[in-house]
Length: 102
Image (tube, rainbow, N blue to C red; front, side):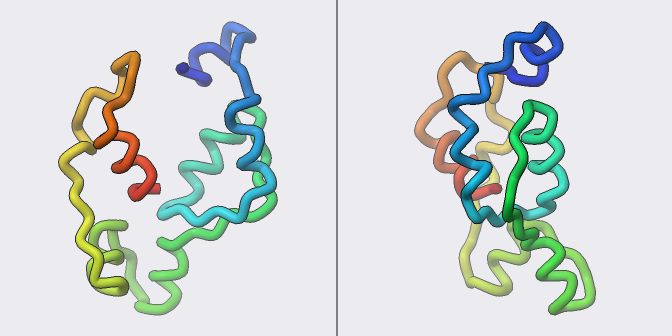
C-alpha cells in the first residue's frame, strides 16, 4: 500500500500503523521516519534517533551501517537497499532488511 499516494486521494488506511504511536521506537535519522508517519496521520509519542545519539557520543555522524559495525560490531548487509520495493509482495529478505535498517 502506498499511503502517501493513497492519502492524496483520501484513501490511506492507518489501522496497520496505528500501534506504532504508542511504541518506543529507535530509528537512524529518525526525522525521515517521523515525517513519513506524520504524513499518514500517525503521531509518535517516543522516537529516539540513533544518528543523533551517535553524533552526541562521537562528535561526528555515521551511516547506520557504519555505526552498527563500530558500536555493536554488527555488520549490516545493504544488498536489499536497491531491490524492488514497489513489488506487490515484499520478499522475506526485504522484510528482514527493513526491520534492521530502521
